[in-house]
Figure 1 (tube, rainbow, N blue to C red):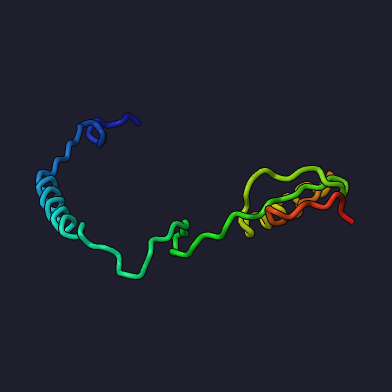
Figure 2 (cartoon, helix red, strand yellow):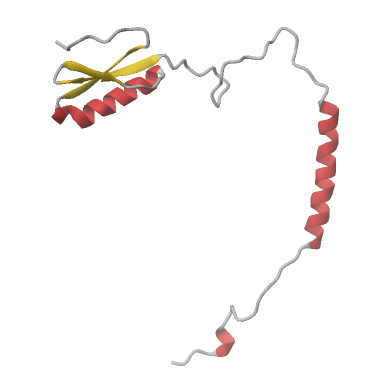
Length: 122
């Protein structure tokens, strides 16, 4: 079967220009800019201070990154991971580390920043 020239849908170029959209958008931008100028003088309610702590997506303060992970090899202390962890992140890291390195005799333990690691695990 020979292809027919009438069936080629992509033969002609199609340029769609909507002039009304540009006019509507500029009107919307002007209306949106006006209330923003009026709202610039608003202040926070008295008694509430701005928190310097970072907050998560729900507005709760993020947990402090005051945990570390200690690595043991054949029950002897090898090193400490040089990175601050939150309690949840430290536990997740240690769990995954223990799952993947058990066959090599390695083990990870979480602890606070100020806690010294044990020399060996019993």
